Image (tube, rainbow over all chains, first blue to last red; front, side):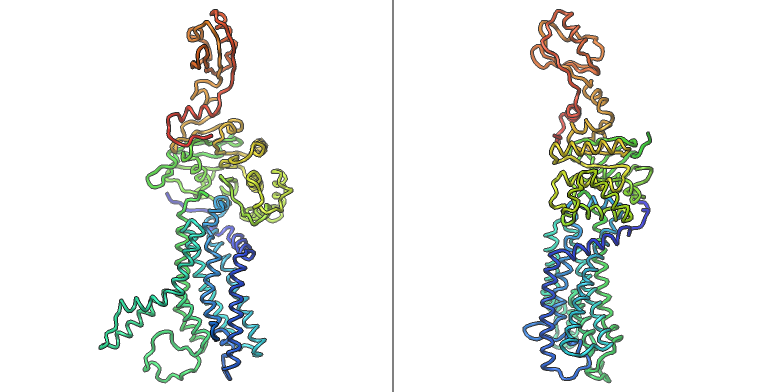
Length: 319
Length: 313
């Protein structure tokens, strides 16, 4: 039995999103995760500043190096962010829907004049809003630290690249928030859904970079007599690695924050003929370079959100 | 009176299993209507269908003249729901919880605040309005749930097991509030296993069995239909044959031996005087006689006799 529903599916959306954002902002869980991110970010930027002062004499994009320079044993700010931002997103979303079941608030909320669409989307947008605020704060903090310590204001292009990096980070966080939301919809227990999301995080950030070459080696072994088989294997390895949002984010930030990056895949020497090695790409070309990565992350976000949406719409509301 | 809820041939199946199987139901405005039945008999599914929270497999429903499937927002705007084991956001205060649902209901802020203050006073939670709900007892949560229905100014309030887990005093307070609201024209649909309570508050009840309604009507009528009478007279006597004595007696519908010289007489009126006169007239010696009205518990037990299920308390 099907019929057309009357009324907007987004009635109550802003109320839910703002309430969710306020809840997150006040929750100890998020305070703790953000403290972790903040401390590591400050540590890595502090290390980067020391490294920059010691080794770099002249650089057109000195400011961007704040994000990418690592000083042993600390990784760069970007690496830290790529590793820890998913944790923030998972902390925001792992109990979005099943938490409502376990608190027994779901049927009461859905008996208000709203559709399920508004509840799910509101929770997602509320989480995204918190992530956006946190990332913007971090970005401003790093930028402010850079200006204070290096004594150099960022150039217009550096700000544009920084903002693009901020957007890429936002989309990357959105993917992980959608992962957590999907698990919170499919898995009934919040603890189990947190575990599932963390397993996915570990798989894609830690194990996938190790697994991709192994799988590529098995799928496309190298023939010593045919050099193109090595190229084929690398292509497959790269394609497999790009299943991980972590890889896509890493490539996107590399091209945005290191303007000398001219390609994110294999390059043959004949393809470089005429190119000025080390010359920076214009910002627009860097954006064009990372467009597939960005589109891939947005597509992953949409697919995951759709999975959560379909799963939630098909559930019986009894709690 | 006009019907505010009408269901015709309502069916809800999960796979092949029918949770609700061909229900016909009409609830009039201002009624307190009870849904009774063992666990899994289809009461909660019927409630969810009325609210448009689940889709019927077949049949039609009209709530306040609206189709809950096509017009769920309009239905939910006018219908309040207090689920079984109601949950609130424990980290928010009672006021904040109500303010949130008032915003979801689309109430303007000023109007919402006014209604919330009034509702909190009415359910006697005004003193603790700014306390976190985490500190609330079960009874306070139920009253807060009812406050939510008041804030919405619902025309129909659907309460699923509203007194489950409440102490006797909280139960009485809640029932009193329901009576007050019903007298103001709010229609109530109550689902509960507490049959004695349902008997005191419901104008009509429906007994659910395996997804369908086995019996529906006023409690007095149901006792007559199921037990054969709304009055039960227990009589103890000597030296008389009650079967002969009461043969052809008006209003008497049944005789049940309870022991030597003790019988239960089922009747649809108070027949004590007639019984006493007939026993004494037949030369018998009347030792004692007590009367009580049939309870919903007895109707329930008789109706579900022999079935294997969770029988209500």
